Length: 133
Image 1 (tube, rainbow, N blue to C red):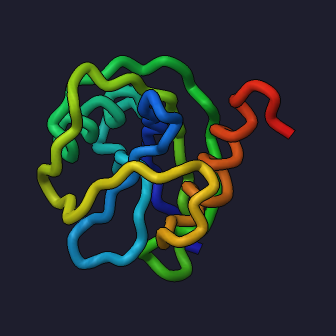
Image 2: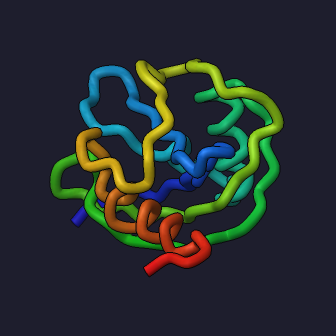
């Protein structure tokens, strides 16, 4: 199975909502992030993609992990994701190939979300909440 390797950002606001984006000509919302370029570390990719996609500088707060899921927009591809908790230094704005951006509740079941977001990121975020059952 072909593999795509990306770095992906977990960005939460003060209301504990998750920032997701939808790229042009796609249906699924996903984390800000993208493919690693030649000789680029996942951390460098993450900060570059945040600047390109939502026009922000950011600080990486935590490496969450390396995960494998189905790719959202490339059928029959394995997505290998390096996922980071990130703090933005300013308000995000749509840029580059982003068609839409929104904040979603961690229990959102209406927004079409990428497998990484639904299967990994949202459960991780919910587990970080105090008094989580």
